[in-house]
Image 1 (cartoon, rainbow, N blue to C red):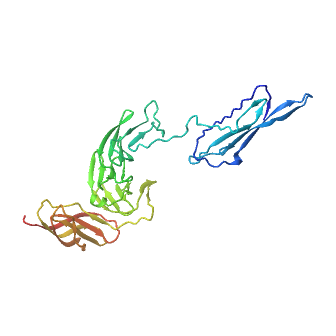
Image 2: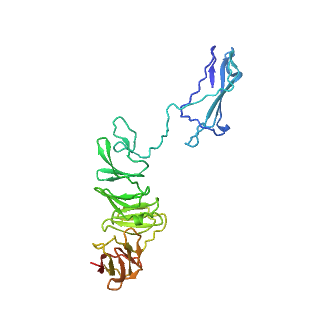
Image 3: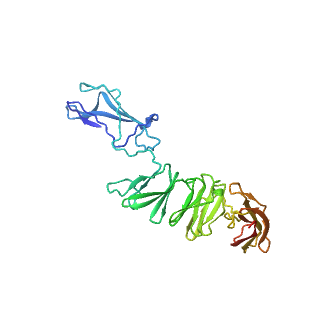
Length: 384
């Protein structure tokens, strides 16, 4: 770099238009990235010849850096150190050996903040920008329960926030959203919810299956779903109107149409339709279990003791069906179960069972599509 010599001292200014972040400890210096600026001047010899000569003994500005023309990621932010070595310049002494310059960021281009676990945000209309501007269209608000917000699903003209310790409805109110909490018990896990725009189904922390429609409805089935782990995943089959509940070890299918819960695949993690075809996501091969159902609890309208003699099934299934009965005399004790009995060609399973409350269990020996039209129970009520 050639300069014209002036009588007054020259002021050296180094400027960088880039964001520089300090990092401790810095990475080792890379000599290949060093840059040296040799300061010299032009001198007229008096005979019409202009030549360039360095200062005596010379001034050298050296950029010792590890970040020159190098991109840095968030986990590799480096230091830049500038040093200037010089002795004198036209009688002015520089005592700068070395000169350390600290560079700062004029405008931060990245920042972090503490996560607010029970808060939800909404963006400007049609935008993925959640910044709250002066128009106050984008915004945020906390839920009135603690813990993480797991999922947000649309239902009608509202959205439902499912979280670690509650379930809340958010309804539009101007530029903001009104809050109404409908369930003070959170979800079993982050993936324990599914549904469509009309209704949602979720498993709460107590293992109860619940429905969110026009209002909250607790369907229960906790005697089965409470064994599921917090890793459970619920998937909604829109075509067949079925909710799949899987955790890798256990699997169930709930049918809102029949209001029934049955055993299902254990490893389904997602369902969806595209071009009329059903796509199923799973981490491994999907195995479909044989058919097995358990009815709700029946006392046949009286708390007196009863004896069941046989169970009659109405179905068109060609494979073998079997029947067993869960029973108990006292509602505060655990259930007992009879042995499985085969259903004969007439659709009757002869099985004797004594108790106050009963649940009928039916299973097949092989996979086959069929419809179960009815279950009839014959028996007697004692001391009636």
